[in-house]
Amino acid sequence: MAALRIVVRGRVQGVGFRYFAKQRAGDYDIRGEVWNRRDGGVEVTAESDSEQTLRDFADSLHEGPGHVSSVNSEDCLEKPYRDFSIGPTR
Image 1: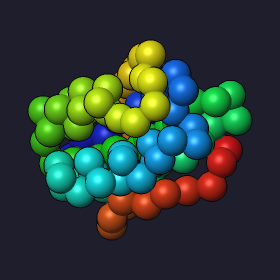
Image 2: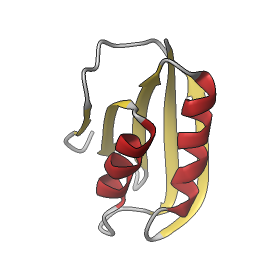
Image 3: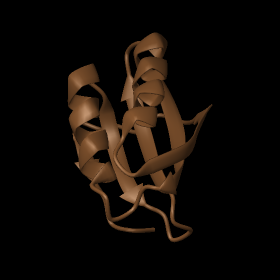
């Protein structure tokens, strides 16, 4: 299993970006969580059995609503996610 921490920056809060990310996660069979950051960005923790699927999912976030200025990802530790959820602002 592989896991990524993804931070999306731009005008991505208040435009339905978290719901878009959840829909895309379903399209790619990704488990994890998405939430608004206090600094105005959106953060995603994503897990999949395939590293390529994770990379494709992260790349697809560029197409989200609002204005995405950057999508940065890094490997992270896995957590036992069963599905993909929208979490509270952190």
